[in-house]
Every structure is written in structure tokens, then in C-alpha cells.
Image 1 (cartoon, rainbow, N blue to C red):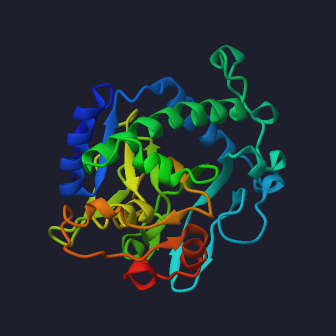
Image 2 (image 1 turned 60 degrees about the vertical axis):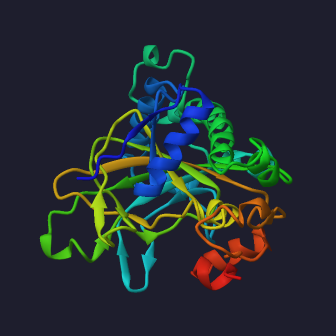
Length: 318
């Protein structure tokens, strides 16, 4: 099982930058501990998520997402041609507020069996997710500065370039069943292999080992050892382009455990659809490549191609 090195995010930004670059070069993913988001908050989100998905389909369907890719609301197991997927997920827009549809947000007052004393300042699932959005944004803000520093760029370069317009933040929570059938292990997935499209994704989950990464070094799939309370950072395609290939968008997938169901959450950060994306010119002599590897483009253009399954190398290679 692959054990990602734990980066102490409470350290100085300079130290974090160096550790992130080293870990990413080897594993493609990065794990953060002491990240400032209360572990109790993460656990409560997972607990409420489990209780929501335990409701009957009639109730969950009240929040059913509209048709289309990555629309807000509840999504039952998709039916992809050639790929069997078993999962349910809930997709909620955090920022900007203009994207949000409150009708798609479940209210755990309607179904929760948790005693009120457990809520403290978080009175329902909506409050929990709102607080998580605020706390995770602080992680993103420090992380994006550290990533710039690790590339020897101005500390604010990535932040300012990617914030042309409003930064988009989304919360997505997944529920995966277990799968006892050995013969289906390579046929049915929670999430099939993919790379993330946006800037960064913060992942957290329960203790069931189902996340797998495809390491560039040996070309093999490795199951990531869980560490509850930590964040795993997945670098999206936009980071790969902005860094001219230094930060790669790592291929990963989610398998179904034989014995236990699994729950996980992802907080995604994306630039505005109008943002101009392209390699930083100052990286051209410093990256592993001697030339520009990606052309410049508008993020919204790539988003549409991603929906259609077009690979980054086919879309943005110069």
C-alpha cells in the first residue's frame, strides 16, 4: 500500500513549498496534515454525508441534479457505456454564491438522528459544508502561494493569474458500496481512471483504502494508505499547464472494497471560465522541457472538451 509522506502544513510557506515539490515529483499526489481545518469538522461532514445517503431514493431525489455534466444536486449511479460505475454523489456549489441553487442543498434537520448537542455551532449539514468551504479556502490560499514559490515564481503569480474573474469552489461527496464479487473487481469502479480538470482538489475520506494512483515511475496502480483527518491534494490539468508540465495531473481512480462501503469528499478549486490559461513564460528555461508544452487557451474552452472526454494532450499541446 502506498504511504504518501505527510506534509506539516503548519510549517512556514517556504518549508511547505519545498516539501510539496519533492512529494509531488515522486508520487503525483500530496498529503497535508495540521492543515488548520478542524478534524472534528471533517468527521461531522462524513457522518452527515453517510446519513444523507442512507435515506430512501424518494427523499434523495428531491435534490436531483438537472441533466448535464457536473450539475448541482444529487446524482444516482451513472450508466456509462463500457464502464460500470457504482456510486451516488452530491454536488454542491460553494463559490461564487451566484452559482448556487439552495433547493439542491439537503437540510439534515429533516432526517438527522444526531442529538443536537453534537452540532455545537454547526446546526445542520448546510452549516457544516459552509464552514468547510470557508476553512478549505484558507488552505487553498496558502497552498497556491507555496506552489508558486516551489516554481521560483512570484509568490502571488498563480493566485493572481487564476483569479481572473471569480474563483470557483465546489463540494462533492461520494458514497460507494462494497463489492464482494471478485470476478467484477476489474469491471466495476466507484470512479473510473481520470485526471482532474481544475486547479486543485482537496480530498478527505473515511479509513477504507480504495483510492488508487497510477505512478509515473513504474506505470502501476497503487492503493493509497488512508490517514483520516488529512487532506490529499490532487493537481488538476490547469496546474499542469501553468507549470509547463512540472506539476502533472496524476491519473487516479476509486475501486470498490470487498467488505466495506466507503465515503469520501472532494473540494475543488477552478478558475473562472474566462481565465486565460498558459505556461508561465519564466518557466521555459527551468522546467523539465526546453520548449512550451502547452498552448494558451480560455478555461471555458477546455471545460467543454473535458466534458466530451477529450484528453489534455490532444487539446492543449503546442
